Amino acid sequence: MESSTNTCNNGRCLDHYHAQDPIFVDDASRPRSEARPVEQPVEQRRTSPERLVSNSSGSHEAGTKDVEKPQDINTVSGRNSDDHGFRRIILNFTPSWFIINMSTGVVSILLHQLPYNGNGLRIISIIFFVLNLALFILFTFISCLRYLSYPQIFKLVLRHPHQSLFLATFPVGFATIVNMVVLVCAPAWGHGMATLAWVLWWIVSVLAITTCFHLTFVIMSNRRSELGEMTALYFIPIVAVVIAATTGGLVAGALPNRNHQLWTLVISYVFWGIGTPLSWIILTLYFLRMTICEPLKREIIVSLLLPIGPLGLSGFSIIELGKLAKELFPATQTLPHVDNAGDVFYIAGFLMGLILWGFGLVWFIIAVIMITISGGFPFNMGWWGFIFPVGVFTLLTITIGEELESRFFKVLSCVLTGACVIMWLGLAAATVQRSITGEMFFAPCLGTNLFQKAREKKTAWSGSKTDAV
Image (tube, rainbow, N blue to C red; front, top):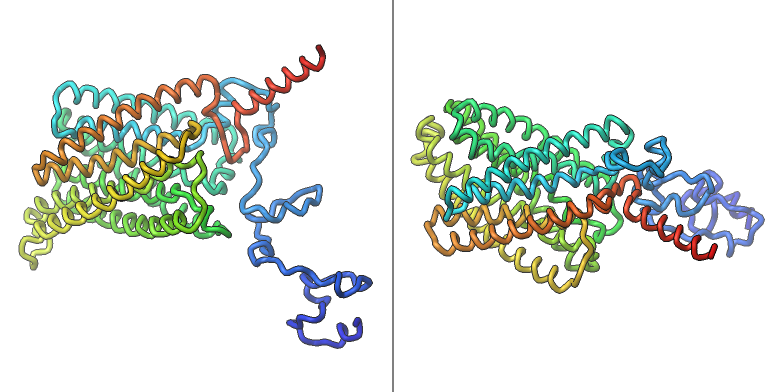
């Protein structure tokens, strides 16, 4: 047999092993029946740096990981893992905390835009706005401390398959603050606040485009072997671009300069064109994942509501942009060769918004049913994902009700707003309680869970005490 192996010159021969190909290297002393290797799937033979994690013990499991193993907390911090206090909070403060800003911001906008509104609700809306601003500053400050104190953590976050997607929550939460600056501060304090909102909108736009392009590249390059590994978190970077378009429409309407208004409107349409089709692609893949793969785990079942976010936000955005185009195009002589170009943009935008509202309604009902029949599920930061998708869907409902002057849409928007406020109050209470106990501070990219570690330590101590007795 060895002679046949040595005389064969066919590099693709299925009956022999060739020393020049390391895949087929084997011990010649072993019988051929034992030496034939079992062909592995292509995904398991790849050894790219992202998939291959070195293991000093030589374990065969090291090369089968999709992503790098979570870094040990001692390796990252360079300190004893028994440290406590604010330093531990900084180390485990993940980007997902900015979901709270997204939810608080959309609640403040809802209370301000309600069709049946009064001074009391507007005051509550401003309170939510101030609270959201304070939380955003606090979360940004803690995040800066985290990445300045532990610079290597930022690389771990960028490489993490899920935590990296939460980076887009920063521009989304920031955009909700800019929207309230336009709605509250600009009417009260004049064009100076409108100009400030315009500058902030440019910052939001740069952050949104950067996160969308980068994270879309990460999603495409960080290949998964199974469709079941896909999550609804893929929508978050896309929402960042769509909300930049929405904010651009609101900001443009408050600017005093017509040219600035026009360019902001055009760029906002471009942002809408970037984010909305991408959301449809992701939604198609996610629907396929839900139909052919196993159901979602209880811990992430709340993510079923996330697809409503880009649908509702895209509809609300395109209607607001159409309303501005209807007013702005005749004044700036935009598209002069088309009669009533602004009206065309407005009608097309409203029609698109109505279609997206219907599609969002179907997904909303299905998501509520699936979450209800799933039974109980543990509380985590993902619960804050309830509010923002429902909130932007409610904003679309409010806008349709205003344009149609429909009592049905107006009443429905009030009901949905009340549900968002109740959910916010419940989640805020649970988050504060679990933050005090340390339960909320969990960094998946580091493999650390302070509450779990404390509980295990307490259990181990109780067990040792029982054994001693």
